[in-house]
Amino acid sequence: MKIPVLYRRRLIPDECVLLDKDEILYRDEHLLITRWKTIRPKKEFSSGISAFFWDKGLKVSRFFDAEHHHVCWYCDIITHEYDAATDTYTMIDLLADVLLYPDGSVRVVDLDELADATEQGLISQELLLLSLRRLNDLLALIYDGRFHELQKYIEDAE
Image: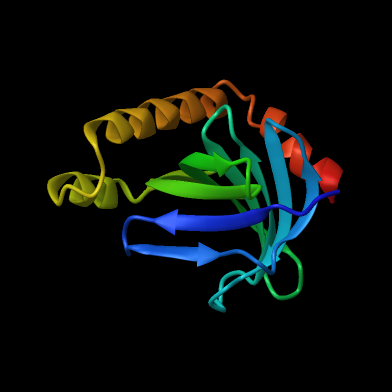
């Protein structure tokens, strides 16, 4: 399998990080699954597996602590750019995130960052609306009890 180049672009803080240590587990035109260790070590989690659902505008990650215990599911609302000539993906974080914990609780985070990015002109109205619509679609999937449809891709890759 040809190994693509992966970047993660964030708006707040403004950064673009090469994900050259991520291990590619699966790839097709609609889905990319990677295994990774945190770039900046954190107490709460140290590694994970992520599935990039390009068509849905979601990155769903399963976070693990240092003992490889499941901490949570972390869902980023994203868009992406793909350069076929260089086989390069740039995942653009659209700021809104949803966390699902083992106890069944759900937490939506970083909407303040989405508002700040809008105020500061860091995100276009088009991307703001895309982020909100994708967030709504994700929450509807979760509340309808269908999150397992996304989880299964990561669990199968493990």
